[in-house]
Length: 580
Image (cartoon, rainbow, N blue to C red; front, top):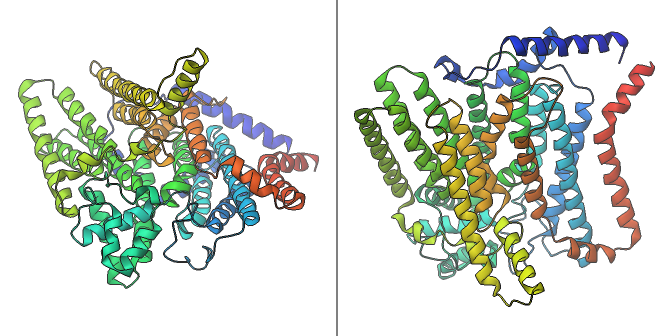
């Protein structure tokens, strides 16, 4: 980097700082024109145009190496985890997925090497994401490069088999149940064993822990599952075809979620600095490891629920922007329909419907207007739920199955960690407390705390409504609900992180950069929960030890070198440029 380049960069920072003081972020309701959203052209031109004019994101150095390192890590994680095969020996894959999945279980030695490869690769992918995020927060990452990174890192998981969770196989089996007229909310997938060889293949692919449980998904979720099973049967592909359909739904839902999040951003942020803000959202959401690995790779229905919820918030922002009473009621109804459809996929998404009802009553201010808003919301919500039940083919029987996920325990859930700590403390002082009793109490406590947080977030918006209130309630409140649930999985973050990412982009301080608490909340939960889905460390180390020292050393050197390249190449490149 030459001395002239240094002066140019300093001038850019000074211009940015002066402009930020002269033109602070607006907090008034967005205009209807602002809801045109961020198109693909916006993403690929905002950063480059700003870099040429010096008024927006300057081009970073060495980003291509960072993108390449993350892509290699994503590919290694996908192949390593795929070649492990099912973690439970009682489960089997319905297809080889173009030869990626093994036809026979690997040996213990191979399992150790593959598990270690997948674990280190996921960690390296998370490291690459953190370095990319640092660039975005410093306003040195154009949106085009952020989008390329997200696309490159997600591609191996989009093309590879479902990984790190077998939930999608349960979705397919539940869809097959619905196709045969059996309600997944009242029948376990093991009922398919009576349907012959095809039913046996569906059941064999499901994690044995979920074969007798009932599905806690609403009408639209079951409808999507049934559609996947129907298309799989129509094309003669059976379970494998259903899985492909569910993967397509997950990928399209994730793309829609990202685009809707960008629209939420562009509806509120000023034109100045739009490129750097777009990059922040793209990195925090589209390139986030939990999105890439679990929403795309795991093909979870949470992606569809999150996209519908984001669409509801976009519609509600348009309601606030319009002055036409009839149009406002129509947009309010549309927002409620989308929120209720999201809840009919994932019950926790009903938080969005509750918020919209509260916000519409808050904004009415008069009893007559409030009554009209309440009636509109109730009619729209009821219509959406009836349509969802029609799509699924069954009534609201799924409500009785909502406790299904709590039948298991995840050690990373705050309720479980608190129960473990309390039980250990009781043991130290000689108290004999049943583990189940403590866990039930801590689960009730965390759920109650999450509910109180949501209520507080909503009530604090009543005196002074702001356009971004919905982002805060669904972002912070959704995170509280996810972490306060009896069990916690990475894909639970889908209903909160998109809105937190937009808040971070809206509140980004100008240089010098600063990672605020919301950034840390997203980073810690995303990395922590992704790491929690890896193979148990003790078992991996035990199996890896049987391979001898050479594979261990080779793996450590290879992946360590990749990590150093991702972390240090931009500085080394810059140092060589300065010496020249």
